[in-house]
Length: 271
Ligand code: UTP
Image (tube, rainbow, N blue to C red; front, side, top):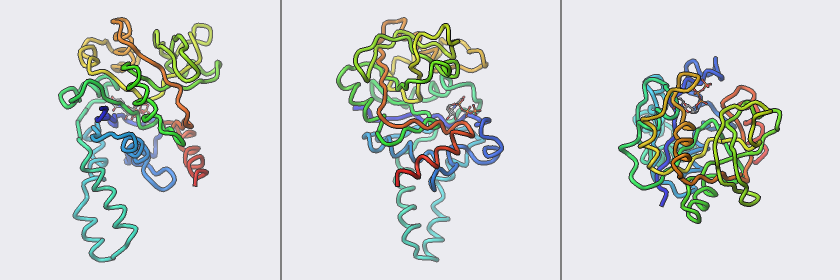
């Protein structure tokens, strides 16, 4: 029912410089595999059939990573390495699922998602921001189950410390139960005093195709980018239902240097 996931990868990754000056952050290894692979696995495990990767010319390396058949064939012919054969099979499997869409100017997540309009086939689809890893429990699976029950748009959420709300997009909400709430509004980086809650937006969105009617109408935000949040706010104003889901897994912010370093340690504890 939910078969497609958009994964925006066209950002500059400036918070991880100098690591990202040449290598896209999504290919940086986390405990021995590229970070993006955790996102791909989460999608496959949830029944997603197509992954739409938004990249830019500067991030061609991501495309190359999944389109390097000649090289693998040559090496596998030379050395009959079992591990390499397994890895190559995995890459081929992922490659079949990926469609590449280009956003050559990083004008924001809203702008990136709009680039995918003509490729979305069903009424609803997913967006996963690859910096936001969620381990231990599959957040996407939980969100799809909630969508099946409620037919609402769903956004992942996590409770953050009151003192840290100004780092996040924060929900104004009406609690439904321990794990879910009705979203009334989303406030970007509010002050502690003005924050309507301490439930933050995390990068997993299950959205109605209707967002493509709203995205062309949003204005640039403070940073000069078109934010997905502004389209969501507009949809809430237009009486679209949005549910916030407090996911069960553990959140790792791989977009900052500290978070990226911590993530390898956290993930290595799992094995
Ligand atoms: P971020 O703003 O968190 O990441 O976007 P960034 O821009 O890559 O990194 P910093 O802030 O400079 O360190 C969240 C996700 O959305 C993608 C990014 O690649 C990232 O995966 N993105 C962002 C786009 O695809 N296009 C954009 O215009 C902006």
